[in-house]
Length: 153
Image (tube, rainbow, N blue to C red; front, side):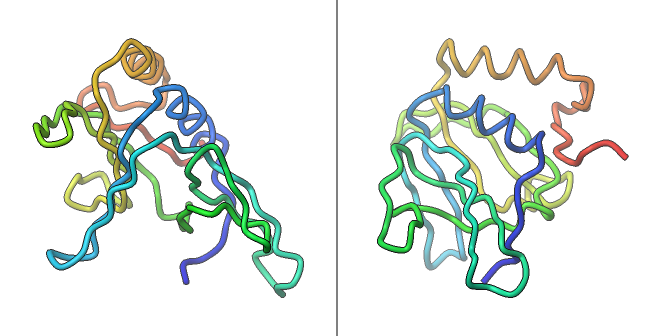
């Protein structure tokens, strides 16, 4: 199980904006043997685990609208160690099979080959609004379009 922790305010802000884009495709790959695609809208869902000793709070990456299990977890969700997700990049990537032309990559290093999970998306007005908003933020590397998700020191 990954370390449980809460997403930073910057990560939460980016996911709040990403939720406005509409249908996107969440993807992660274990190897060439197995990968997962989940189509839909995604949000962060903060969960409190009163029964555990430490790390009682975490932000789950959940498929919206959120349906809950009997334990209160979202029916479809990912556990993410948010402390390791330090960079995001929005770039062109055309996939004819699912008719997308952009990807939003979340990485542990400033290197797209170090992707942990990513989303495929179609260029829409809401995606263009997200890109414009985040390009205007002072924590993006304007030369390479990397979004720094770590809080300022």
